[in-house]
Length: 325
Image (tube, rainbow, N blue to C red; front, side, top):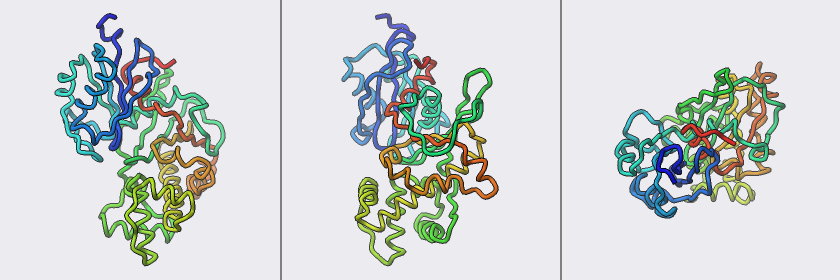
């Protein structure tokens, strides 16, 4: 095989606060191959994790890579918000021996993948058909809260948003939410959307609800809050999950209004896709549309839960210039 950058296999990755997923692209094919998931805690930095993956693949002659990472990219130095990794992009490129290493926000990458997703990779949650040629909105809760979107360029191409919308200030829309947010504010100061709409957010919601009931919260991890909430076996976890879905609807509706995203709202991240039918029955959709005089504007906007496991990897491939097929 030639070692030219366009013919050599190319590395793509999706790095979050908990896991890093790696895959290879062959030629100009934008659909990544089988991915390997590595716990980020097992490696001191990105380069070590990438080298480990490439060794597992037989150390191919990779010359290009694109990394989607759960962090803003504001320069050469990257210090992850929800993990201890801190590294130089250029030093990592040189260590890996790449000619080109591109780092983009993970939700920018996920946004780039949206036009290439297939119908069986999405689950629609209300609304009608998307309006062609209008922006797309993207939100997703996992270790943190990611927010992005796509604007049509007019020539069939799209312009992604690179922002940190997960850190906007979270607002209450009823007295119960106000009590929960006030209690969280006493613990954390600023209560961002991510503070309650993420893995840690589920725990924060549970803890606040238990305290408001005069109970001492148990030490739970996000998966336990979700499991107990879905089972209905813990009333505090059950309410936490319900409030989570309601507040996600509020923030998602705000995002669609801000972007004019009549092309649809897409929901990614690691939490919502695992909720299944519960999410369909949850307050999400009603709260998404509850915008006073703009109910009629939001009611037809479709919402889609992303069920594709490699969507961010696909977006990283698109960022490298690969053509989806």
